[in-house]
Image (cartoon, rainbow, N blue to C red; front, top):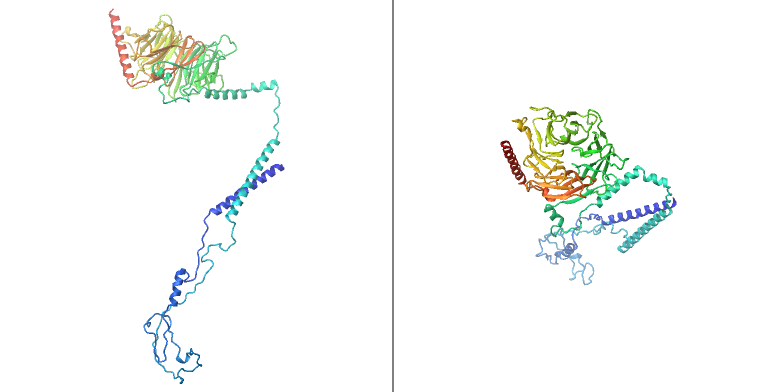
Length: 632
């Protein structure tokens, strides 16, 4: 305590010295007030004016005197200015300069005064000025006060004060050092193995390490080239992209969660372009792990997932919510709809009940329709049941619709494997089935049609279960939202155009055939997706491990880009990023790959017109083929 009090006194003394120095500096720098000089009347004349006045007094006209004969010698000076009249003394008052006795005359006779009249001459002589000096006239205030220290003394004093302040500062630092050294840190006690294990396994410690290490890994995986020379030409990667060549951006796999599992679905976040989600089926070699897994991956975090969510059943389809970026929705093999939240733990925050009111069969397809303030989740299962849900209330579906097809030759149930809504549509939707047909259905009854499957048309062209169905996105100057693509295990991808008439003109028109068939695949085609930015580009993934990109404006016979992904395992799902440059691909060995297709994803103004001509040619060819077939 004594040392601290002494240290505090030194600090106060140092502050007082600094304050005094600052006050003295401010006083020296402030302007000195000048006291007004006071003087008596007539004291404002300069020394030269006084000298001129004295000279004029000395040289003024002589006073006129009377001679003995009574004449005056004031001749030409009469009329000179003066303030008083002066007369010469009478002759009897003149004393002889020769030492004559008083009253004697030089002529020896008695002086007989002789009176004469003399004209008085008035002279204007200014009075003699009385100059009075005051000590404040030619001096400033404080001139006669005791003189302050000289400049040399001030410099010396300032140096002494600086030296004193420096000495105090050094003493304070030394005292602080001694005080810190006096406090000897106590050595941390040795932890036992049980205590160390409890700390490492505590939830707070694990959460801290997980969060901190993710931040470090994101920063370390940044691939920006800070040594890039912008004065050089294009590098090899850029030339490859402009030359329509793919580039692998990322590969995601986690030995703990992805090993011995297959990717069943992939999807990008609509809010965060660097995030994508993937779903997995069960791991047959790990009976103690959850059957279904959902992982959220980050482009900037390559070695492990950002989030991991669990499910009691295989997750067959997954997606981010279009209107709630923190919510992830999944459909399971048991028929449950699960809702996870990235702000919560790994278990779902909401889920549907396994009852007759919902799904009791596998759910392979999900979609969201509506707007931010009014939207629904639409799900379909393999038993032909369509349900509409509110995300905040999954206990009971808002509506349930049975997709029956009475005119089917074998069964009236439609085993739905995929689902698609045209952009902007909330009522009519299309479903792909295990039998290879596509049907159009309505959620509600409308003019000319009932709720359920529209039996007026059936889209037939595949010879195996349909694995993917996707409508053309609605963007750009032209509307191609009536076009959709389907993929199938029959090794083909087909382009369709939806019918708008409620009823066919003839029974033969009840069957709709595809506009075009793409038949270059070497195995099952498991998924197909239109590009969200380019009107003529779509991608496909196959069981042979091949990823292909098609551009209908360049070629309709062969893809413009094709590559074998990873180890050549079967590719199950495909999803395009929002900017259309990156394609996320799910593999049967549990890997998720992200490819960049480069500048080809950016459309040109004429691409819409070229696609319109291409589609018109396909329609014309289809119509001509139908006519020839009917004639035959």
